[in-house]
Length: 89
Image (cartoon, rainbow, N blue to C red; front, side):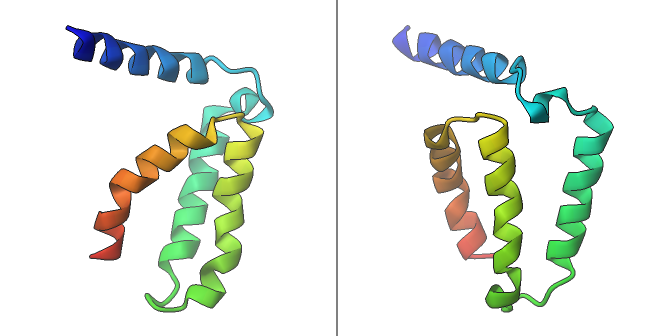
């Protein structure tokens, strides 16, 4: 039963993040979607092993997370889940 409560608490925390009042939350959804699509297009257009040239593109997600007031711990736990898939792709 406590596992269900934990999952409900996670959903509730996501709902609280979605109803934020930051500058990123106030942007029109189409602006956010187009900016992420542009970011993905730019990142995918690079060679697979050109890490040095891709380094500046790490600033976009970091800045967006900071501006949206998303907790870094939540991002880190979700990144740790996805990291093995990224490393072996």
